[in-house]
Length: 140
Image (cartoon, rainbow, N blue to C red; front, side):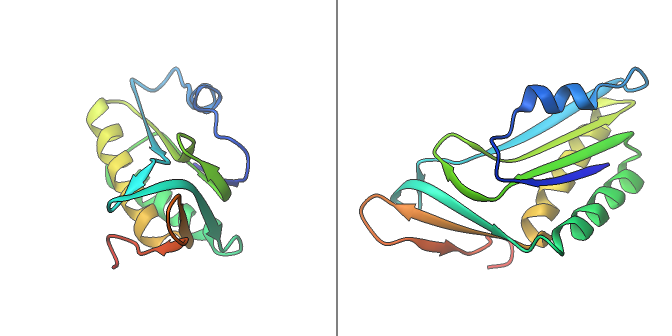
């Protein structure tokens, strides 16, 4: 179980290699990408800010809960911070388990809780207007 906060580009193939396990029968990954639009506005880039002293413990709790709830073998979260360009991966999640259903269910549980609980804030920069901090769609 691993959490990483990084300003570097996320490389899914390398992360997948780290998840490989001969005892797992299934693997699932999730990638959240920076898209070029939101609520009718054209987005040019995003900026993620994080509370790095708190994020690892929150992410660790989410991963531990997923392992207990879904009986997965392993899981990882990698989240970007800093400025991201359109098309870049903002968050990556990988999950292994004996069977596929546990990987799908755990992956969904993890991303939903990351969006709701992880102390990360997103600011969008628009091509034709001012930048704006984005309200969490679950909390807001």
